[in-house]
Length: 363
Image 1 (cartoon, rainbow, N blue to C red):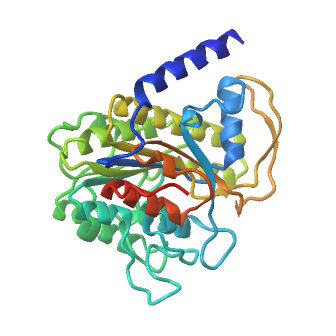
Image 2: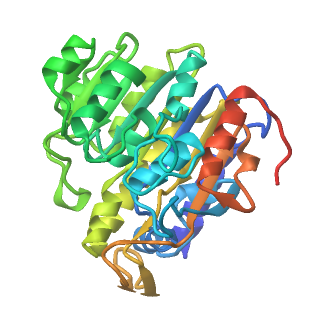
């Protein structure tokens, strides 16, 4: 109880310093954080393990919260490609599709990353899984198949050209192609740490064949929170602001295996990344932060809370995705829009409103 009291006091102090930003105005910076596969029960389980109670992760203190539907154009249960594409473009697509009009005429649909680039903002994609995986691809590429790793990488390097690309492995991204496109490539946490973030202009960090689960130890590879911090320090040099998507991609992988310790470890590291973002945003009045998920994985249900440092008793209903509505948490400029009834296509709509200062009334 005493530990809980002091933790609550610290969280309250943090939000007094950080979360007193205005609801309206223009969002110069947008940070969209996606816990892949992170449904409401994954969040509750992580809070129980880390702090002894559900409702205790830092983003659960955000002033605006809701849940959103995630179905794709052709299925009640989405995959990551369709979910990311819906958030990135505001348009439903079929499972497996990366930000093209399918169903439809198969033309490219502009993404938030590309639209922010057209507003002269810098952009970045950060993930713990390979950089060409479905969620980052939905924001930076266009293809009929999420499996088209080489084509997705080519889109990054030649078309959308984010200033920051950081992920757990390449899968289609070659050093020769990155070098010829003007990207500085590196492979270790030390190289990431050693970057001069004041002068770095276009970077591509590809860490190992993949970054291990947090519970297994990441070795000489970076944590998500470290990648988030470096990405912010590079992108915040742009006077026009930036759009940054940060994904905790391995929550999903752990849940596909119904592996609770790994899933909780990934959610806790994802929360650390949120804390890094909040610390960076302290005192700012020009930033929108959204924390959400693309879908839930595993059909997780908590049976019993077993206290701090003990994994809760749970049951799983599937090793695939589910249609459970996922949480949305928002802070900052236009954060009030992320409340009430929501679909994943509204993510695109509300972010675009925020960066273009369209101050419409909330639903």
